[in-house]
Length: 301
Image 1 (cartoon, rainbow, N blue to C red):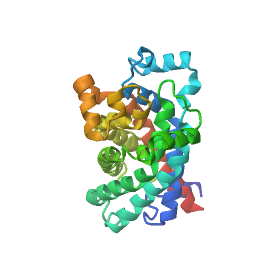
Image 2: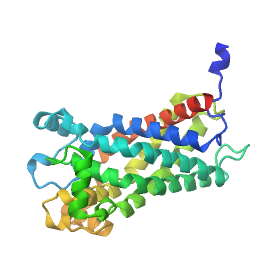
Image 3: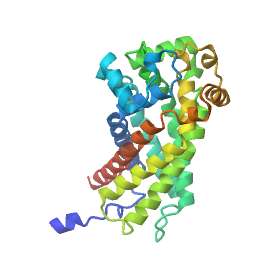
């Protein structure tokens, strides 16, 4: 009996076993991923913001962690996590549900074919378009709460204030930039993940190590490649907190790129690169491990 349990083909479970399974597994994986790595994400946001106060300028992750903890308390690194938890569950449910549905529709689960990268890329991009439409407002609230000397301590208060002062458009000003970033990010992530998973675990047997390595490396590659767009997204999502008139009146991705280039040159597009990669490596490893685990656990029950 023990041997039978150990030999369960984890990846061999029917890939099209159910949309509901994928959505529930995705929601649980998303919440786990974002909550665990949130402090590093907070540091990334602060390093990307063009701050006018020297107190909000950090030389690295260690410097940021030490100074924030000393001057604002360690709890400041968790400010905004409630918004992420509220949004990550539904958004990841939509993300993974859409991914599995489109992958099946595009022929990515055809028997006898281990991996079809075109179907996977299309499914990954489609999943991102759907989930980002839901997640974008929560991400705006999160970053407004993460910035230096944020006035907000409640996600609901932040949402009401932003809506009252800037209107509904403030929650979606970065959506085109987000899609420009996350569609290639997700396509790269899913493609690298599936390729590595097939390479490291060709028989599809239960292998948590494979999911962690494949997910971590896929997240690192995708995160590094799309960092310039993430810097632009952060500028747009936090513009309402800036005292800089040019930043406050940025209208979209083109304005964001122009401001970044004029203020910091080429290196400005790499702001927050290290914490972004360090966030995505373990968080993606954890996300894929959690997703595959919950998917198998739910199917077995």
